[in-house]
Image 1 (cartoon, rainbow, N blue to C red):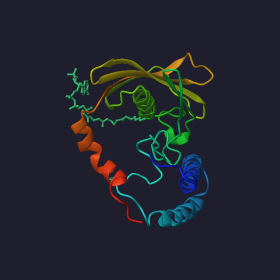
Image 2 (cartoon, rainbow, N blue to C red):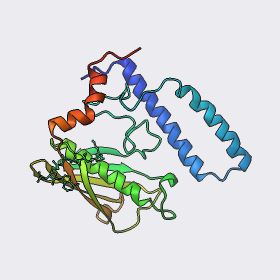
Image 3 (spheres, protein in one colour):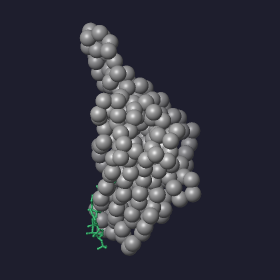
Image 4 (cartoon, protein in one colour):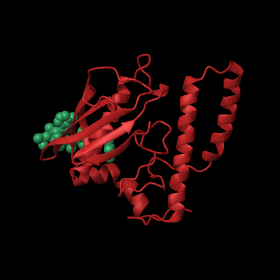
Length: 222
Ligand SMILES: CCCCCCCC(=O)SCCNC(=O)CCNC(=O)[C@H](O)C(C)(C)COP(=O)(O)OP(=O)(O)OC[C@H]1O[C@@H](n2cnc3c(N)ncnc32)[C@H](O)[C@@H]1OP(=O)(O)O
């Protein structure tokens, strides 16, 4: 594992700062009723701000330098990543064997008016179940995710998410999870059951070998 030096810590903090700014931008740009001319001015300023970030970029086969794939540090994960403009972000911790997530969804996640898009709920639950599966010591990829929408998920409302492994059978790991409002955790809004499949060594090498070897074996160009 890489030592977390001051430079790396500072970069991770900066990525979080940029992520916060991007999420504010996404939410304001979704909620705005500013005059039309202001929308055009904002579009131009945002393009100008984006340009220097695009001057030095990675490909899909390069993990972010601030990430640590071995330690599970993923700053651009679209559900939990502090640097992701797409992430609410969900913060996850463990209580015993149960993963607990917290987040509040803004207007950018709207499906039916004033409620979350169903695909967003499925994405959050895939992450919660995946987290529980990974931390159970039986990591795998989602093979199937069954989602039951019992009640709509309100926006601008603190949410509580759960994920827990309920069965391991050879390479198949089953996990379940829920979404509820934080102030009414017993009233389930959405629930999911997922089947996760542990990868065989040759599968893991075929799928992730190129990224891992570029990051951890080959010297990176300055
Ligand atoms: C902290 C990190 C959190 C991360 C959370 C996010 C998790 C994700 O989103 S992962 C990304 C989404 N998932 C994917 O892209 C996976 C795509 N699918 C695949 O790559 C493959 O289908 C894969 C790896 C799941 C399984 O392939 P493969 O290993 O060839 O399966 P195979 O050997 O045929 O099956 C193994 C076992 O699983 C079962 N199985 C496999 N797929 C399924 C499925 N979709 N449904 C039911 N059973 C299945 C098989 O029946 C078999 O069972 P058994 O051993 O009892 O005979």
